[in-house]
Length: 388
Image (cartoon, rainbow, N blue to C red; front, side, top):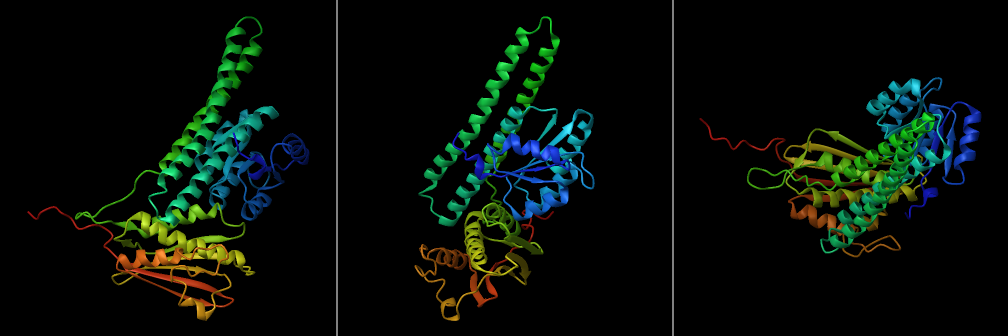
């Protein structure tokens, strides 16, 4: 396993100071550990820091662990959520699965070694998930099919890393079952402990398998077609997907919002439309990173105006000098030291070939807005059923 576990912060939440101190002592040599003594404090950290795993106690005054997980699901949807609960509160763990979207719960008392193993598996999944998104973004932005095999090979390597975690848990399960079998004589307490450990390992295997399935689902083809074979793509769905890709990579404090004012369907495949939106979002996120603005926001606004679908990507960055605005779509023109100057040229070609248009307007010190207009289709394809 090549994962750098210190690169993926773990946030532990507990209202009892001795527990916070004990957890720091147990984990700080293995992980980057953040701590919070309340749900409110944890939510602030989730907004400001790139937290990989949220580990929270259930019984806390003001906001329970289940409630915190539910809020975290909205604030930081890519953060893996783990609930610590007592056997008597097992119903709370079930609530957390349903409302908080937790991936696992840990019952008290637990061994530090077992918790470390659980956190490593969780971080392995986050690492693979982010690597997949980076590869997806690279493929969409490049728009080159020639590099697909290289990207697929890299993806396979990352999936093998996650599979290593599955194998490790499987081996641990086998060892625990062997101990249980040998201890079937006197001393049933040892049997109970061994079987309990086996059950924990089995749950880890199941969670890892589900997570792997979720990773693979991201590559399922989704290309709805019109009756005559043309493409039909919902702009909002692609915009949300691109925003999710970038939220995990954007600097902490940057907000990416998608505002939809009605359904907009365009006659463009999801992949080239994704290229357009991803390139514009990447440029906007980089512009906001350079800005000293307190807003730090990127907004994608989608609306239909007559027979046109309008997509606006706005940022609160430093803006573009007036003499450069007309040149930004030219091939090989770039204001970035390491840029190739092809991103916006590719975007314009895709939009124009689809029968649309793109323009940019910018105010120095206030930000930039790119407006894409594409032909809009009806929300539902026309019926092909012959009249009776």
